[in-house]
Image (cartoon, rainbow, N blue to C red):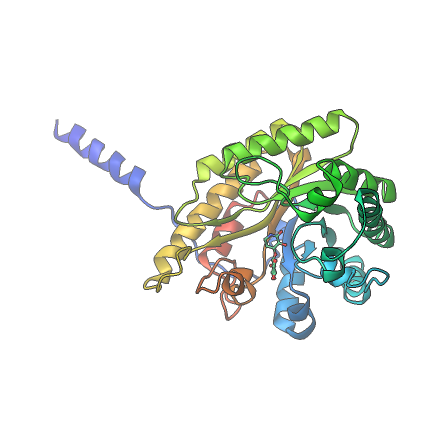
Length: 347
Ligand code: XIL
């Protein structure tokens, strides 16, 4: 009896023991430890002016997503003028250093220049304008950009189409048209649809998958789904997230975890104990990576983090709160989530 009680207590303690998070250093590239790409969003100003940032981004990651400089307001600031300067220099760097470049993003309702917002014309004129926008950009980078987020965030949380300016002016089929125009301009580029909350909102995810499966069945190319995965330690459920990955690969899309960050302070409170949250953040990331490792290799397009260090994270500026959602801290020291990632990467 005594033995039995002892064994039960031991079993209980073992099962509730928190996963050990090793301490580690970053002398090895993350990407060399994975058989799928490990990506990062590139903040172009930091890349240009912060040498440690550039060194970490280059040493650790083998897929770059421009965080802002490929968006319409940067690339296409005036109707008859495209500004390629920053984008070209990043593309040249990617070619020289063998980084995959993931183009983000062609059609979105945010970060569009005022000339688009104020564009006057009927449905046909809008469609032609969208076509010129997409095809000028895709043609310019043909053969240099592996894949495009053709359309970004076109769905509402309830699974209906967002009433963006594009939908309002061109009609519901602006999405199909955008994919067609991108494909015409570079038939070799992989084409993605990218959105947030697809990992947690079943209704939205199912609607998105149904929409694009219908589009694909009607003969319009789409290769992958970008699940942004902006999550936080309070609300994210790793089991649910991994199940969501399953839905995407079951529908036979490449799966890009495209903008991963794990916030620890979603309510914007005063933070008392960062270390506990860093632990939870690491455990959550570990579960996500383990889930991703189990997907069919042919559909693993990669995992992209939305920034190198907490310092540059968009969460701080966009939501105006203290937070620490990334792999490196403000002094470019690795955090527990970096070490757990290293531990669980497949190679
Ligand atoms: C964010 C950038 O990180 C910020 O620097 C910018 O101010 C706003 O956009 N979903 C997306 C990304 O698809 O393009 C967004 O990036 C974050 C949310």
